Image (cartoon, rainbow over all chains, first blue to last red; front, side, top):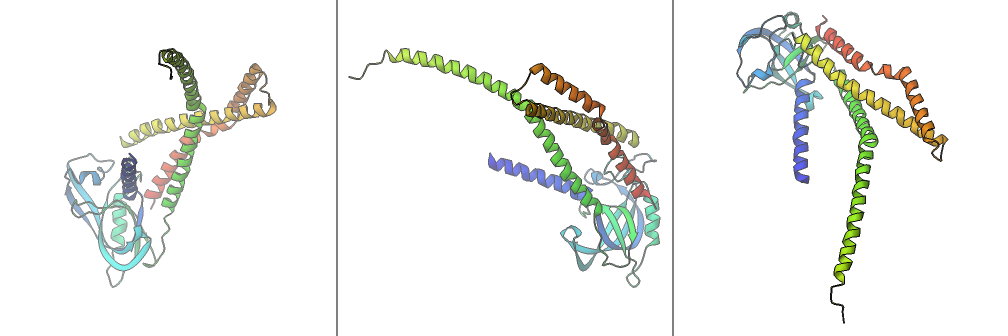
Amino acid sequence: MHRVKTILKAIVFVLIGGLLHYVLPQHDMARITGTEVIRQDFSKWNRLFFAQAESGNVEFLNRDVLFINAVVKKTYLLGFIQREAEGQMVYRNEDTGWIWPPYFKFDTRDLDGEAKNLISNAENPKWVVITHYGWRNRFLTIFPNAIAIKPVEGPDVRVIPWFNIFFFAFMTLAYFFARAMWLQFRERSVDPLLEDVGEAYDRVGDRVSEKKGRVRRWLDTWKSKGR
Amino acid sequence: MGLIRLLVFGFIGLSVVYGLVWVYSRSIRREKLEDKWAEMHPDGGDVNDRDAYIEQGMVEYHSGIRPKLILLVYVVPTLAVVGVLIATNWN
């Protein structure tokens, strides 16, 4: 039982961790090398990892999706430790619309213009910080969604993830608040109820054991006395 | 369409939170009043007086500012959405 509980906890932890890793914003130090429009024919495997049509448009089986190609600085530990190595990254550039994930992004075309304006080459690099969420997976053909592009002076600028700090602080507070609410509910509503039930149960139990005692005593009179 | 869905489901979700916080806040206040009564009357006091005292305290609680502050449950997320909307789309 204990082992099953541990495994269930681990599964929940991995699922929530994965969801947060997918949805929360991350920052890449990047150099934009180009932008493209490619028609995407979604499969049932990668449909989930693309957003819906832009909020003024109608949803169709396939559509053109804007992409941003970039060279990014590779990192360790979710972006906390920067490495010297560089790698390729492709971002999709899509409206998230009103629902999910809650970035309320409607400026896809403007962002495309910004990206085009910041294209640079290796000899004369213009470094930018690309804020994005999502995963890149080559087998599923899925891409992180770029949310914002901010020009920076160089590749060594330190980016502080304010939103994530605030988010986790809020989640911690919310957890303790929910716990306090639950404890209060238990103390004021559940425990008195259980106490009543427990007392009733004890009364019944007492009566039963009393009866049993009488029967036993009567039975005992039939036992042969030790001689 | 998406905006309407957000408003409807957001309102339902926040109403659940509002209801829970409302009950919780009342419960805390009632417990405080009970504790105060117990402090003033170590022997327990008259049951009817105690009920009247607590009811009076709850009426005062409802006319105070605290129950109105719970409305922030609706206000803060709305401001957050507007804030994110502006931060994401501002050029």
